[in-house]
Image 1: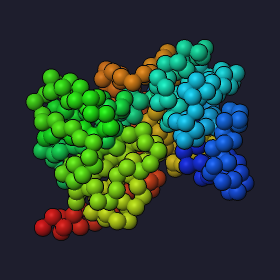
Image 2 (image 1 turned 60 degrees about the vertical axis):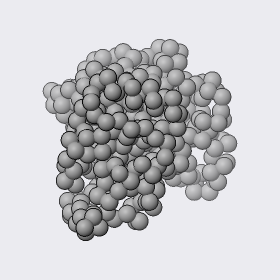
Image 3 (image 1 turned 180 degrees about the horizontal axis):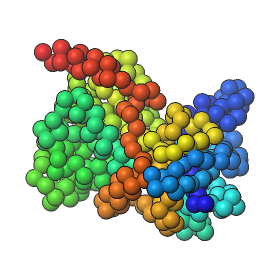
Image 4 (image 1 turned 135 degrees about the horizontal axis):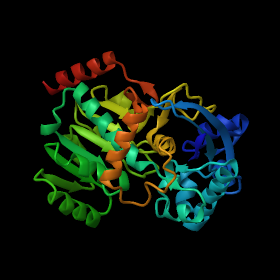
Length: 359
């Protein structure tokens, strides 16, 4: 049978460690978890079964954990982080996995998978191509539900010079009224602005000031920050925020303070078949992150090859992943916000309040 392995790691240290080691997550302080994560071995989480394509092809896999937290990955020498990820990859090889997916920070550290792929005997993907496809589709779905005309809308992309943010800008540049690019490095922003200007006549603005978000109808959060960057005072009434960042770019306080904006999680898909992940990684049954789903799609296609690696994502791969998802029955999940489904009634209430405030 075709198969895959996928690496996850603790994002919210206490909460996520408790998913596997209940007592450790409950009693250990975050600082202790961060310290121990360097010395903890790779963790076998579960055997995944029940993935079934529309064409009847079935797939199994394994969820594995790299013990490093985001804080540790960013503070340790990159070579040390590579070694920890590669240790997990070796476990995947011993299990018989034929392709390996890199989740969350394991996909962005260093050179975004290139070194890890060179040092393993099985192919590797970060899953970012399908993540982009799903993020764009979810953002468009949410904008439509909120009555936003993308052709006239201002779309802001946070983390625009990163792998996901950049290609989101490339895909949206010809479809929206204006693009606003936000990132820390001004030189990289100007370079991207020039590149986009060659592709379409759509106005492009660049900024590192979050106040610019106040004029955005749609915001895509795709930074690599450890902290929530988008605060309640940053957003326009009636705006849609599609947050694909891990950890979230949007603070939870936005949900309670801004009942007039729609915040959705990006990059979440429904997996075909009676899938059983045999481990709770934070999503309800049958749902997976798009980066994980890309690994599954490649395995279902028998495409055991390095796929999405490095910091430049090819548009052709984003488009191909969208096509493969349709072929095998993967689809964007119902709109969700901080792991909870957003109902039609909730969206109607958000729209009503936004319209009242705009009047």
